[in-house]
Length: 226
Image (cartoon, rainbow, N blue to C red; front, side, top):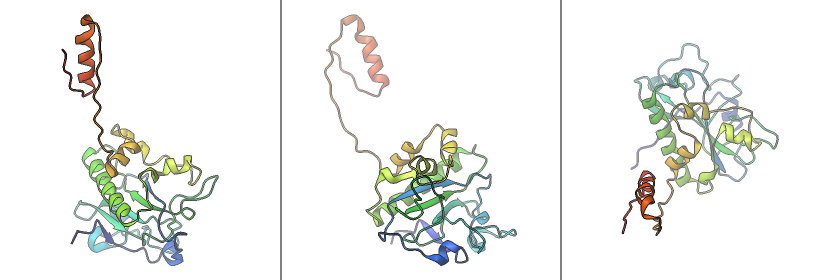
């Protein structure tokens, strides 16, 4: 059996879990990637499952009746510092994740699965790569389970806002940018593009040949001169 990418930590006291509003078509139209906006990479801050996440004495996780936010999953560090993904809601139930924009909300119509990645101080490349790598694996698994999700609909909160279906947030682009990445990079992790081979024949004056060859090699081309 394939190992589950997520462990179940249902936020049973959260209003979104209690409402259990089914997604309109029964399956998600896409996935939104969020990041938390706070320097706390520990799952226990957001997820109430002490045996895996550790104890949160403040009890300000999503699993409480007065929380008006709840994503489907949260990615961060468990009590041993390992990066894991906690599932807070069933995938086909509407979450309370992105607020709304001028055209409506991806919480409901169309409904998107929403994944929250716990931010740290945004300067640890190893944690960044592990957390977003796990998010990409989870997106791949969800696309297998829900063929309705297309790679173009795996978007950030910022992109959801630009489409008019979420509140005005800039996450997680500010974090991706710290490491020279963007959401196209993330989508390419989830659904790598098919590689296409292009061969071309170019004639240039002899004096330019070395310069042009060097430029092409710099782009990753293999060059034969005759």
